Image (cartoon, rainbow, N blue to C red; front, side, top):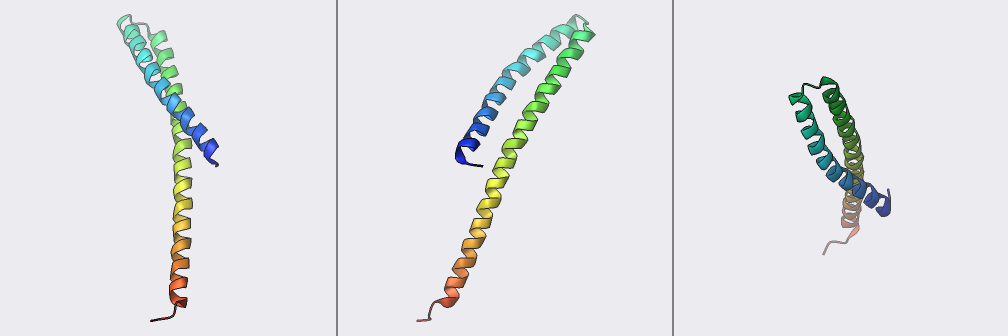
Length: 96
């Protein structure tokens, strides 16, 4: 993934997190009102909405996590390659 695409993924995730935080508070307040009013149908709908939005947030989180893990894998591969090169260079240097 190139830098521009990675920034886009991270920006979308950040916006989704902050949107989710506000939406969660809103849905929680509505659910509390539905409980007080013994409105089971509304409560069920609110909880279903919250579950759907939580699942979408989780999907985005996994996308970010996979991005980070891919970058780590590439970094470790590069470090291993460089260490191997350094070891080969050391063996070819004349002793003083």
